Length: 250
Image 1 (cartoon, helix red, strand yellow):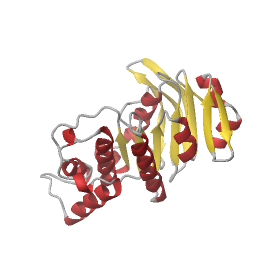
Image 2 (cartoon, one colour):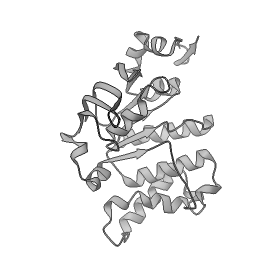
Image 3 (cartoon, one colour):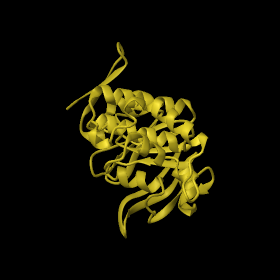
């Protein structure tokens, strides 16, 4: 379980997000939604232990993540950020980076590490491009390669910042199904997502934010029934019972 307790975060003394209290159950998918600039990424990075909170705490399985040693945190939590620099690494080399938290010095991979990397690439659907440089790949292929690295890191908790933004619809759906399978395998996924339909379709819980605060959180159907999206985005939310899809209008 992840617990955010009176969490306030930002940059230096500049508070961007304040007073967040949330509980996220293990083995679930939680989506954070909200307008641009409302503090979603700041909240996610603080929850993942990449930024120190101004006040409050992030408790994972009874321990404060910001009090953990980096190695222990990297064995528990992985993070897929928006900003990436693929460089000249191959897909296989990038995937092996996921095993770094478990290696001593000098890094020497075991047979188990090789098996985990191969399985991660297979699950992410990048085995056929394992020897290609990331710089040669499309945006969707690169994102799948980073997913393979996260799978190889094999953490209990996965944080993802806009994993499907700017991807073609086929890559979006493929990645969301991979995320769904990660949940089936016991992972806890917390992600920022802008596509509200995908959020409603795949999430167990939605945290809605506006102006640095959480407006509401709950199951997708609760968010819909309360008209939360209408209030924070200035839109109207509709549900089509025939095909189980949500759609949105001004």
